[in-house]
Amino acid sequence: MRQGPAFLVFFVGLGAWAGAPALAAQQLEWGILADYQLVGYLSSPDGLEALGRNQAMFRSDAELRIGRWGRAFAEIEARADHAVTDRNRLYVREAYADLFLGPLDVRVGRAVHPWGRADQVNPTDYFGAWDYTDLLDAPEEPLGQTALQLRWYRGAGSVEVVVAPRFRASLLPAAGTRWWPDFPDSVRVPGTGTSPDVLVPAEFAYGPVSWPGGAGRLAYGVRISGAVRGWDLSVAAYEGPSDLPAYAVETEFDPATGRVSARLDRPYYRLRSLGADFATVMSGVGVHGEGAWYRPADDPRIPAGERLDWVHWVLGADYGLSGAVGERDLFVLLEWSRMAWPFDEYEPEPLDLAYVFRNALLARAELARVGFGGWEMESAWDLAEGGWLMRFARSWHPARGLRLEARADLLGGAEHSLLGTYARNRRLHVRLTYER
Image 1 (cartoon, rainbow, N blue to C red):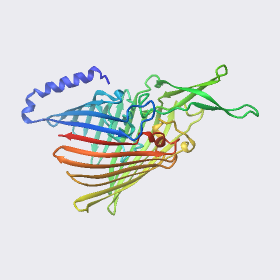
Image 2 (image 1 turned 90 degrees about the vertical axis):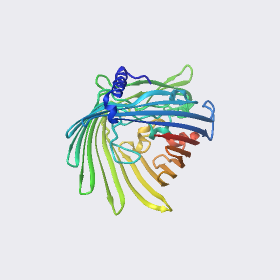
Image 3 (image 1 turned 60 degrees about the horizontal axis):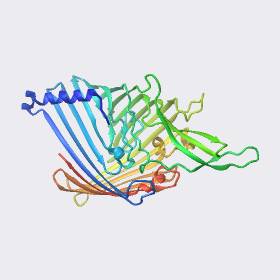
Image 4 (image 1 turned 135 degrees about the vertical axis):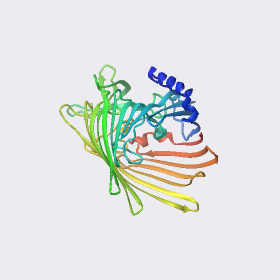
C-alpha cells in the first residue's frame, strides 16, 4: 500500500522531535510487536494455494508527549504472506497528532475510531474499516480513517465529532485466493409461455468498483456519551459511505452461443444512520445493547422509487468469575445479532459481509490466568442461513513478552450460507508473538 506525502512529513517531524531536548525528560515511548504464523488447511481445492502457508508481521509504534497540551503517535506495519502475496504490505496503520485544550481534545490524522459497546458486531461502528483479505483474521486488522476528530468533555459526558474527507473502505479478498467465492457454472433462465426454465452455461466476471460522485466519499458523524445511575449510554448519527460495496448482478444472454455473461458490479453507496448503545451491570452480570437504523441512498439492490430502511441491533450479556478453576479466571459472553426489514427475504452474495450476522448467536468463553495463558472458545451460529463457526485456542506465556498460541478454526453449514461457502478454509495454526 502506498502512502501519501503527508505521512512522510509526519515521520520526518516525529524524527525531528526525537532529537529535541524533550527526550531528556523521557517523553518518547515506543513499542514493537513481532508475529509469526504457520497455517495448515484441512483441504486444498483445485486452483487454490497450497495446503499450508506462513505469515510474518512486524509492528512498531512511537508516542511523543509534548508537555501537557499535546502528543504525536504513529504505528507502522509490515506483513509478508508466503502464499497470498496480495496480502503483503508496508503501511501506516495510525499516524495522528493530539491537541489538548482544556475540555476539548483535537485529533488530526489517521486513527481507528471504535464506536459501540457490543463485543463482536457493532451496528454503530460507522468509521470502522477492516482487512477482509483473510476473514478469520479480520477482527485483529482494523484500518484507520484519515479524519478530524473533536471531543468535548463535560462531567461524565462527552460529545465527539468525526469528519473524514475521503472515507477508506474495507479491503476485500483478491481473486484466486481461498476467500474468493466460487461462481456457478450455469444459471437458470426463465422460460416463456409454457416453456420450462432451463440451465445454461454462464461466465462470471467482476465489474469495476465505483463510488458516488462529487463529495460521495465524505463521511461525518457525531456521538454523545454519558452515564446515568450506573448506565453508560450514547447516541450517534452518521452520514457517509458504507465500508462494504453492494453487489448487483447484470446478466446478458447470447442466443448465438447459448451462454450467459454475468457481471458482478460492486458500487459503494451512501447511507444515513441513527444509533444508540447502553451498558450496565445487574447482579454481577454485564448487560449491553447496541442498535442502529439505516437509510441507504444509491443502493442498486433497491428498486427505483422505493425506500427500504432497515435496523440492526445486538443484545448481549457477560459474566466473569475470579478463581473459577484454581487460579484461572473465567469469562463468558453471549450476544444475539438481528437485522430486520427488508433483509428477511434478502439472499446475500458470498462476499456480502454486511449481512452475514443478520440473525445470529455469538459466544465467547475464556479460562485463563493472567500472564500464564489459558483456553479460549468462540462461536457464531447463523440462524438465518444455517452456517456456523467454531474457534478453539490454547495459549502459553513461556517468557516475558512472549506468547505461543495453537488454534483450530472450523466453519461450515449450509452451502448457500457464507460460512458454509468457505468450509474449505477449515484450518489449524500455530502463532508465536513477541511484544514489548
